[in-house]
Length: 81
Image (tube, rainbow, N blue to C red):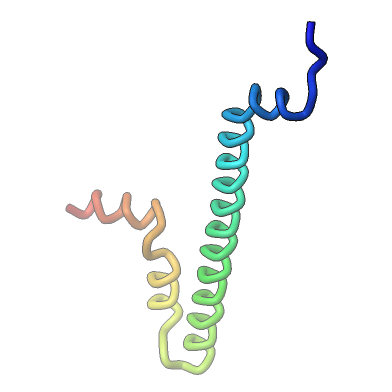
């Protein structure tokens, strides 16, 4: 019986390492996308609040903008149809 060495270990587990690497990259990119999405949402909320504070927009308009694109807004749109 031959003793295992680094080369044989790499060759036996190459597919697992490749798929593991792909999975790690996918998770990492997903986290970056999630963080960016939340950052953009928060920036939009701050801008809407600033418009409301300066009087360019009513609180009701701001609320509608903040709720736009949410699941609740989609449900209300389907109810209205």
